[in-house]
Amino acid sequence: MNTCLAVDLGGTKLAAALVRGGEIIEKHQVETLSSNNPDVLKIALHDLLLPLSSGADVVAVASTGIINNGILTALNPDNLGGLDQFPIQSAIADITGLPTQVINDAQAAAWAEFHAYEAQYANLAFITVSTGVGAGLVLDGKLVTGSRGIAGHAGHVLADPSGPRCGCGRNGCVEAIASGSAIGRAGVPFFGESTTGKDVYSHFLAGDKKAIAIVERSASTIAQLVADLTISLDLDAVVIGGSVGLAENYLSTVKDALSLLPKVYQPTLLPALSGADAGLIGVSLWADTKTK
Ligand SMILES: [Zn+2]
Image (spheres, rainbow, N blue to C red):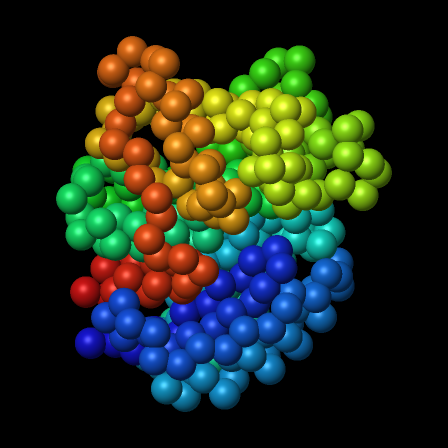
């Protein structure tokens, strides 16, 4: 069995772990430095990966953004600290001297959840509601990455044509209404200029009517996305994760909104099980399937 050096490149953290058969053996993590200088990221990757690479046979990377032919881009480059067109695959292969594969982090997390639920649901979507809204698709028991690495970017489907402008440049995407950042922005008129999504969520849990309306709008937008994906792809289950998705009462609020729709739109709705290591575990399991 291969030992995989799994890497998770997120908007706020850079994590690396040696993973064998889905179990993490050793893990290191640093904060992602927000810089549009590619050399800053290269140095951070070098310092993090070099000590671990001697124990690994392959490298598998789960990264925020779109991975097309080993090049990292984003629908919203602000999510990468302004970094655009970063050659992530060759940069990491140069550091480690190992075969290196890269996929999107929500795609990797979808694969982790498919395994966490013991492959019971052959047609599954994973939706993470966090700073942004990401998603990954498993169809017929296979992870779908897409020919350009874009498959599953369901945070950018239309939720409301008159909704706020999304970071991708389109108006009214799910992400612009349902994400943690969007929840924070919607709270500014009621709770002050520096309001965050977390602040609004605390008000929601405390029973504040304005905050309830904002969080319920997020949850019903996610419920409609669940319904759209289910009717498009004939899904068995949808797994909800992320800091907002797993926050107290969020999933039940999504369930309440979904229960108002006809049965055909209602898949089994489940909480994510893999936690903060979903990207690392998912991408290592995916690399295992590629090297078998
Ligand atoms: Zn968008």
